[in-house]
Image 1 (cartoon, rainbow, N blue to C red):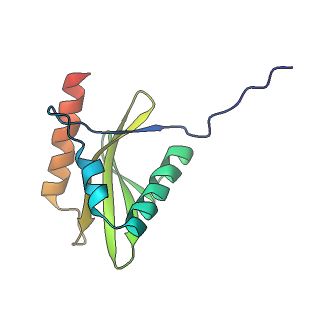
Image 2: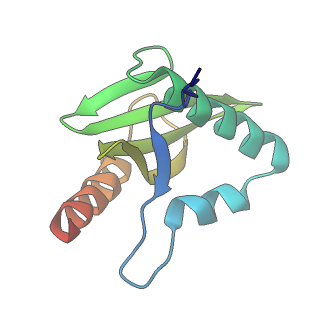
Length: 120
């Protein structure tokens, strides 16, 4: 009898890579402390396994752009991502300091998504 092993991850994770090979989200994550990285990593994994998800963890920002909403000790983080070919591509991460997502943070993710689309 043949048993198939199901992959519990619906999406694989990829970091957006700049033209020069940098990975801004990975670099941002490394700047956070271990507890914050662990919390964000768990939230990303929840999205991987349960995709598609909605509020309160994932909010659609616009077509092909979502945010993962992470509650850290004493502050809030957001990871903006897009999906393509079975992957969630992490475009931008930041600490949220206002009620509304700042336009400049959204624009960073939009620009990176556009760069990604041009490469494909």
